[in-house]
Image 1 (tube, helix red, strand yellow):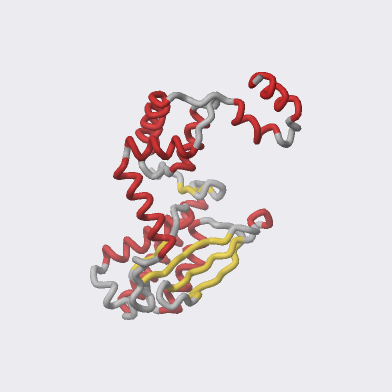
Image 2: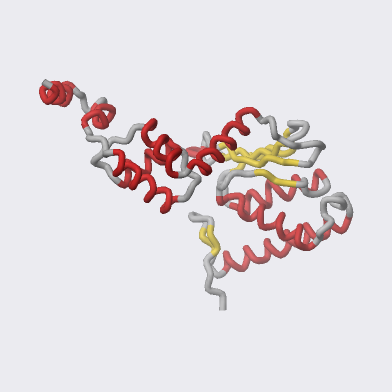
Length: 238
């Protein structure tokens, strides 16, 4: 009877709806096998993957099986309870925002890109102050190369507002690596930059960083060592 029902589902599934029914026809792994596979994936990928992403990783590694979210979540809770609890705490904290700390203006500045129009080569960069929710910078770009975000978004923002915030918050996109590098560099050059960010000394250091990086990019472009597509600077300088 069950086999006849499965065959009927196969016959009635249209090409558009077939992928949605495939997972119903696949076998589920046993408990011991599921625990072993989940443990292998966590060792391979780390503890950052939650239930949804872990299901996707398992389906990619074992395409012949169906993995239910409740069973995968139970396996993660059994094998790595501390890591799962930590992810739950971070997710809940982001939802409630109860621990968000921005006591004053320019304490936290959030930088991100809106890429809804990327098929038209339009990227909108915005920088928002965490305390006042004020938009401190709003710039439209034709690409998201790190050098363009640095020169057209970050440098004008720092010059207009007289320095760096205490912290710049971004996601893990590699378009922000240059801005993060400059922030760390200036922090190393001046341990007291938080208390003197509006002084002339800080502005001089920022100008030095701008000039040095602009000259470095010019050399890379002239020697064909800057990859505009992959946003990387190739190594191999003699």
